[in-house]
Amino acid sequence: MKFSSVLSHFINLRYILWICFIQFPLTFSIQAQSPGVFENEKWLVESQTGLSFSWADLALADNSLTLEQEATFENAFKAELNLGINYSLAKNLLAGFNAGVGYLSYDTQQTGLANTFTNYQFGPYLRYYIPLNGLFALFAQSGVDQNFLTSNRYSNTSYFDAYLDLGFNMKLKSKWWISLRFTNLASYYSDDFNFEDRDGFEISNPLKNFIDFPVFGVLYQLD
Image (cartoon, rainbow, N blue to C red):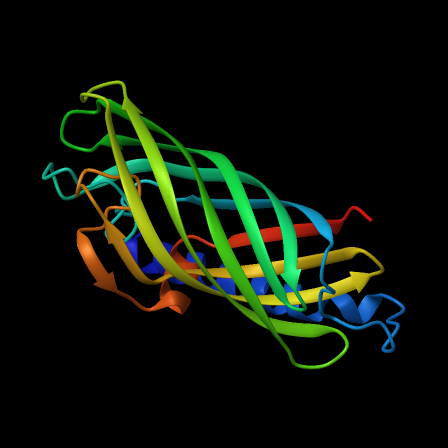
């Protein structure tokens, strides 16, 4: 299958998933009177996950570890899981701390050698919500992460990053929310050898970042 055909099917699939996700709450009995915001002095736990993969000739061009190696990779797979605890300092303002792990693997096309990377990260953040109605809200999140990157073929390293993300939040029912996270509107990475393949300070397109590596979240209020 040609690269252009595979890429087209891959992007089309992601847009279909996007539409399904937006329409998903329509299958629920929505209580419009429930505010889609967070009151102060509440504890919430959260899980966020991202997943991306490609086949055969599909190169990791925009969201991978390039490491100044060959330009084309095969059988690429990338996943990330983050767990967080949040506390609402004020209405719609959360302070949080997250810890997570990311995994990336691909084969170098010319040699067939497997490359694997595992990234451990943790750090604090602030998140502010802008309610649109009783069900939907937008948010901005800014934070700092410490990262520890290990590899089967390269020396282990550590680095930190600072970021500004955007997001879309949707209330399912009392105490439950789901979200889409559009990462790295602005970011800074202390080392260009990193899990996100970013270089110093950057401003990027968060919608394109989401298409490259979609991140979804589930949030639950404890009290």
